[in-house]
Image 1 (spheres, one colour):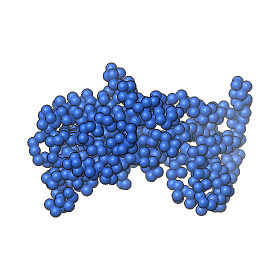
Image 2 (cartoon, helix red, strand yellow; image 1 turned 45 degrees about the vertical axis):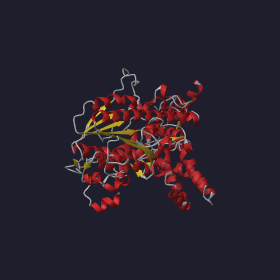
Image 3 (tube, rainbow, N blue to C red; image 1 turned 135 degrees about the vertical axis):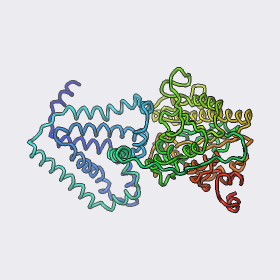
Image 4 (cartoon, rainbow, N blue to C red; image 1 turned 30 degrees about the horizontal axis):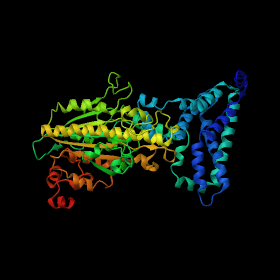
Length: 562
């Protein structure tokens, strides 16, 4: 082995030679996900040109040589190439292992993740992969000797190399332009797999948008919202914000395994046709609480205007955000009271990094015993089913489905183990949700209060379907597993604003995160100019008097709605 290392260190290359070798590695090895998908798309054509298919890796190589050749010159050649290989190998691992694509949304999610979540992806498999595809190639780049020519000669040599690369790329583009244009137009997701340039482009846009654009002027959507109730009873709503729960794993929605054994006995209504705004927490959470819809959602704009939590608070309700999710509230709770569940190991529900979601019950009970307002909204932000360490999301006594996957490199578990582990997280979420409902039912009975619980997940999860794991794929081509999410509603029997039997009949209607803003205002009986009754999920099951309290439409319209 020492002889091999000595031999490598004794070798000398010109910067151009090292550039060609490194770009070959980047194009032909670390871009295998792109080449595989592009080749499959080409081969799927009814009549395709074999030469066009054969040109693909060479065309990619020539483009990479052009880009890297413009950046890596003389003494910065090695640092640039090493950095490129390191980043590319990380993306290669994420794409090959989990099917992750580093578009703008995934970059945003990566920037806003916490240390504990990032460390959950580290395992023996990941380390071995990184050593083989990143550390060893980078060590080879670092160890090889570079021989430099005089500056002008080397510059001329580099220009010749770039000219040859450009010439080849131009020739291929000219001959096969229509083929590349057709495949690209019909398979827009393919370009997202080019490593590392999609991530570089997305990172540039994220940094530009968040650190260099001037902040927008804060927009007030409603200066005087109000709470309008028909009686003098206190009202408490708990919104449980789920994490990474997919609707198709809920037995309430027809899943054959009984993952909702607790809430199914509590008279809840499950809305089975609900979709998310995004495929990652960083997008979905601020989007669902924003007045902006999915089609026009922009984080900068959403951050610079009132969200539904702000409006409820301004109307006079007491608002408290309690989080067991280390990813924070993504800016939604900035202007209201918030609490973070401490992960200290003195709590038997915590391991120092994460807590089981039962840890949310203690601060919830403390708040319910100290209600200071007539109307209260409490948001419980779960850790839910966040992967890849699904097995850390539920205690051992909640291992309902076995065998399960007790490791973070989930791609090395059997499909049965992986699904069982994920289903255990859903069953545990159901257990905690039932505890929340019990607390609210007791409160309603003992203190004659109106109480309600709304559960909504932020996004779904892929469990190896079509080779994709976790979440965060670009929404345009993300699978249903990542966008089809659960929504569950419960209220006490004293309430007359909503007909639960009517809601049950409407439970299959198509809904999305776009409806959350108005549905929350509706549940809290908030009269606001920001409220849009047509986007209220419950509008067709509200009493006429309840609609009249939150809108200013005429009686004929009210009857038409009902």
